[in-house]
Length: 350
Image 1 (cartoon, rainbow, N blue to C red):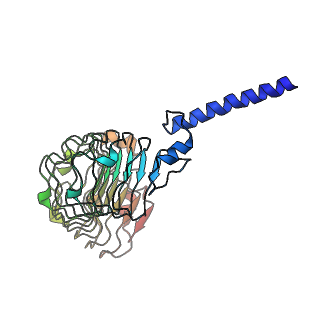
Image 2 (spheres, rainbow, N blue to C red):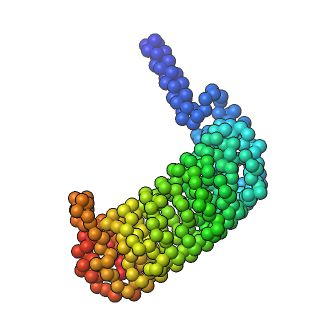
């Protein structure tokens, strides 16, 4: 019996040791220090949860400076403070950082020491929303995947800012002060893997030039865009979600083929100055045209033709499922031809 008990205790000891090692591997802690050591290196202004040893919580503490960041930290939360500068020194040992949240501070471009961010070779996510930035910060680490700069004062994008950010997939510049002159033809050069670009709520009058070829989501709501150049979508052949709500688009400002682009699945053109429904692709699934100046729906114009080679794919006809037309000058009933063309239509709002 005693032998059995000793054996069980030994098994439990081995199991506990393996489990402890597994937990520490998950949190990328390679040494065998006691948790108390991590408490000791935790900045006194912040909170270091023992259950999440790779995270450092310093938000909502009235901080004016960034404290020294321990080398074990992956996730750094500094939002909603009074921080004005990003110097190099606090990050000297923070070689493992993947995530930095500096939203809602008072950071300016002059307050970012050159090299402070680019030295973070493993950084993936950088949040700098609701600060005082006047231009996109540079240089940034090549590893970066998401850059969030919403609600700043950004009006400039220095040449070469994005040239080495080949891993960036999301760029959020909404609610800034971008004008058309902020962009050069090579502004977005280098963003080979960018998939989502958000420039809503700026002061653009034209579509931004030469977007990255892999762009899938393009958000340009609440600008003053008046027209779209002919063949504009040829350089972004993968765009699937296009939002141009609250602009100044008119019929004359659209390309001759309208939005007959096979990649577009969701098209939002609400609150513009259109008087007729533009041409669309048979692939389109959601179309928002509410609050324009449309008086009638000419089905013979908007019903997209289907080539013989595509008939098996489309089966029941074009794929449009959602159509919003309220806020126009259209009077019901819905033309029956519309339902005959778009047989998969599930929602029509007039």
